[in-house]
Image (tube, rainbow, N blue to C red):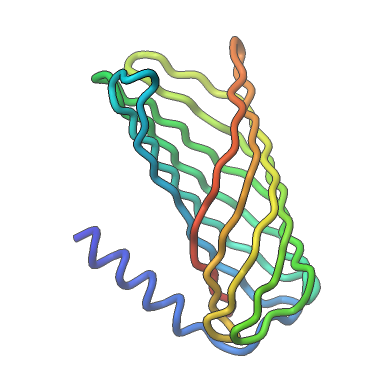
Amino acid sequence: MNTKIISLIIAGLFTASSAMAAEGQTEVSVSGQMDNSSVDGGADTTVTVVTASLGQYISPLLVVRGNVLLASTEGSGSTTTLTGVGAGIKFYVAEGAKSAWVPFALANINFVSLESGTFNESGYGASGGVGVSNFITEDVSFDITGEAYSNTFADSTQDGTRILFGLTARY
């Protein structure tokens, strides 16, 4: 079932209309990462991150976006889940065209929730980064983003970096 849903989303991304990007146009992005690691030969830990955003161009190079994030860490018999919802901006250095590589910068603020077993805590976070879009068509791009983030909770702070791979479509 999940495979069918993911296939439909990807197919929809490739049917986007008109060239990038006019003011008022919509941008939809989905990205993620997954890694498996161990520290000093200890138990394996798997980290999965999935992000989605929906944005609107307020100029041909600037997008205002709403974001959703889901991150899960599994290892040593426990699972920790981080969810976030927020807003941000994305600025392209140039307009896209088929086969073009277009650099961008982005920034986000989020409300976040961390859950592990019976532990549940809410807070806020911020992230920012740079990336590049490779335009498969004039409307669809494969994106690579390097991002730094910081999440603040009542008793702790979580800081890190990540590299995300994804697809973006413009309608």
